[in-house]
Length: 375
Image 1 (tube, one colour):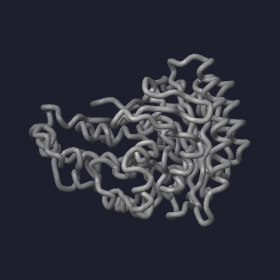
Image 2: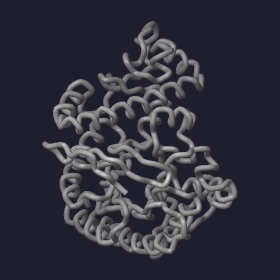
Image 3: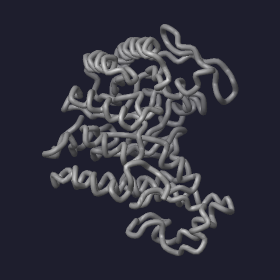
Image 4: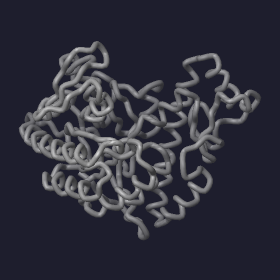
């Protein structure tokens, strides 16, 4: 499933390709998030033309609307959505986590109220795999339980035990998939921010020998230092011959740290969400295009960027789009942020291939900033 091309000589960073049912994906790689079957404020053709070959959709949201029967009748999620490349579908576990007041963890699944109409539903590990098989997902994620930094050890232990139990059921259901379906199941490591629990979860999930491994429950409010500490604990345990996925990270500093520890894949709504509010990446950090100082700034967002906004328009024009609430503003900013990250990952892969990753990281952060902050 994964072929490693080159390993950086001074870190655990690596390049490679991941072979999936809808084509190969270059690693390391960032996945744009298309929760409902579309990346917000941008067309699939624009995402495709950047070179992106893997996006994420969400089982929880697609299960509630339009529902599995509609997607099956539409020929699966690829045909239904018009995306001809790979799709990873999250299990909905994080959405259930974020809807804590409206859900109850049961022995065999989770009962929750829909955020759409208040109706009650139960998701089981087996049903979640069945749904993703119906979607035709290229990568499937099992139902898990995520806990935030405010949770105590007892809750983290219970979540770990439930995640492992559900992972075993998910694997059993995936092993019974219909003939010809080639979607790959990734196990998810939990354990919150307790080192011993993280190690326990890693050993239990790795024992299942799923085609890929994910680390969940990071970037949920913990400090950057704790995030890095968890990567340092877990990365040496991850199999070399399987793709490694850290869920929910999408800023350059978090991505660079993950790559340094040998992580291959990541996703986050952050780049597209901030774009819809007028914030865009530049080599010198984030800028907020709505600010008055851009009213007569006729330079592009960033020199050298090949996105539509930078090739055809100015910061002043983008500011006008946001100040007048024109839809074109979020569309242009979204394309720019995804193009920035795509080019960023291309540069990362080149730096790894040249055994120059750590100097690249240092130089990039010296200019961009160690945190994603406005400039």
